[in-house]
Amino acid sequence: MKVEQFKIDESNHQHKNEHQRKFDYVAADVANLDEVLQKLAAFNITIPSWALGTGGTRFGRFSGGGEPRSLEEKIEDVGVIHALNRSSDSVSLHIPWDIPENAASIKALAAQVGLRFDAVNSNTFQDQKDQQLSYKFGSLHHVDKAVRKQAVEHNIQVIKYGVELGSNALSVWLSDGSNFPGQLNFRKAFQNTLESLKEIYEALPDDWKVWVEYKPYEPNFYSTTIGDWGQSLLLANKLGAKASTLVDLGHHLPNTNIEQIVALLLMEGKLAGFHFNDSKYGDDDLTVGSINPYQLYLIFNELVEGMDARGMNHAKDLGWMIDASHNVKDPVEDLLQSVEAIKIAYAQALIVDRAALLEAQNNNDVVRAQEIIQEAYRTDVRPLVAEARLRQGGALKPVEAYRQLAVREELIKERGSKTVATGL
Ligand code: LRH
Ligand code: MN
Ligand code: MN
Image (cartoon, rainbow, N blue to C red):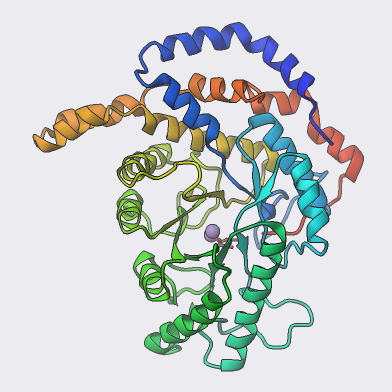
């Protein structure tokens, strides 16, 4: 299944006048319009291979039909997303949920639809079929050196797959932790984790990075060995320049000031990037921007300010990735919505009047500072995002075009209605 350019153009034609009117209205007040459009066009968000099927929960899974049955079909789906939004030019693999057996041909297939491979993710939170030793009591932190060694070797294998795919980062998330007080010696668990990560770090090619993801709880409910950004940063600092901290928005306790964490990690040069999603209660993995778009904007506000202060390339110097699951939505539609929400938050952050904000901050003018921050947030920047997409050949209204073009119906015809993708 491939979305033809002329079909996207046809769909855009229907919305042309409405779009122009809305774009002209907002563009008139954007002082740095060209810069904003150019930055939006350059900004891409990676699609995780594990989010292309309907995830479900431990209570059930309801497949929507036409789910990708193989890695090749997942790449096809990301190709569809990218054709429509021109902002999803890469895929992140979770291994062994997706194993690139024939990496060269997978890489070539992806390139045909304009895609490359972003960070590869290891998985030592589940036991795989035929696995020798169990991760029931952890992996890199395990009390048994043999289990740690097995987990280290898996990570090194994942790096090898990544190298073949042209990726340059390894993303490590551990479920290692404990369920009950007394179960674990925290200090030893941390030291074991550090020692294991050092071995993985040693195996990184020169131009590679390792991203250390943290999470406060689940599947362990008393302690998690890399439970917060402090623990992740501690590890990253001890490991060296190639290691940094990955922020998954769902991996914080309620009301955590994530934007402040982001600002400081960025300041320290230790922010790896993001797993974007949204949540109301915990690691809900809901569509980005569906619950708290203001928080997302405040994070981007810190990012734009901080990246500019460090002279960073917004599009290239951090990892931008979605990490979500879909229980009731078509995953492709959900991912289109997530990418859109991220770009909206980014656009809002790009139009903040930075000079005025700095002045208000220096004068302790709290009211003015809030006015400036909210002025940008309350501006309808959607026509700016749409214009940038249009100029790249994408759809003015990606979800609407996806429905109009009956992509899912076509996928169900091709793949069947009872297919189940690997992943979450
Ligand atoms: C853990 C997590 C981590 C995994 C993904 C599937 O909750 O966020 O990033 O790799 O989910
Ligand atoms: Mn994650
Ligand atoms: Mn998660």
